Length: 433
Image (cartoon, rainbow, N blue to C red; front, side, top):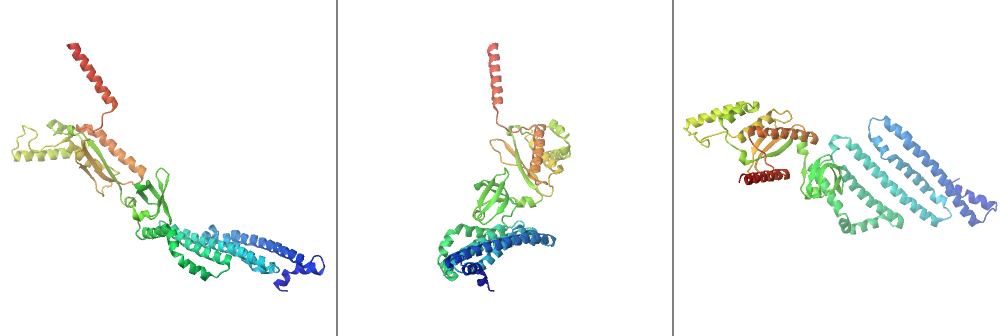
């Protein structure tokens, strides 16, 4: 018995026993066939799902490679079971609706559309599996694989849409491909940002501009944090305040930004900060000052050696030292600068193999900037800030020992105290008169 004869079993039974007219028998036969097809499809669906979710999953766990585990994770086998069930039912449609060819065409179109969508989902799952598998290798962990997956998916969806139109209209694919060529200019306009993003992703990868996990700063867009995602359209940056900034991928090659990766892979993190010294607190060192500074352990030898050098120079050139300004002299600012150098040299958290110096910057209305330029060994932000704060805590506390003063604007309390002193002096003057 062939399939068509089996599909008309109900019809023959009803007609031969005069239980229904031929038209009614055909209708009942079609409904019966549909019910049988649904039951068989449901049983087959459950069976294949069990195989995909249980048996294949167990087999994947036993293999050495992780690729099959990722196939299971991304539901490739699940979608395959759906496609198999749909295809089997699709092949039986001519037999199910053998007496209703018009309905057969519409039902076949519905199944064709469903199979196209399932096919796209299978390809998508395979691409995601490939992406996840490549992420297991160190060389691909920081690459923008999502961008390439999205490009492939756009192409697949375009092809899928062409197949859909071909299935719905019943026209051959060649006509739609010809129309797509004529429609290419419009497509370029529609997908302009996508194309720019794709080009940017390639340039970012080839030039190694940005990687996943990089700390970047892009002030124009308020981004200052770690790159957590690079896809076709945008780059997501998780800022340090836990907010998310989204930047168009194309702007990574059209605008400027700071990538702190160089600092992360280097031997240290830069410390660049100044202390503002009041200009009127700078002075030449007297003999008393020199004796006092010689008690400071870090610069004791320097003060002695430097003073001897200066004395020899002044005597050799017959410098008149009746006025201190004549000849060479040490200053409290110079001594403090040397003290900072020696302090940094013995600090355990400062990288001695990288540039380290204390420099005096041009004078400003707020005083003389004395800048530290060095690198901390620890590059973790929180630890870096603690190291930097510890260094400046010590140096700010050391400033008075050199008879220097830090600049700061007068506070309200300072103005209030000064006003109180002036009032007291005015009252005393009035009482004396």
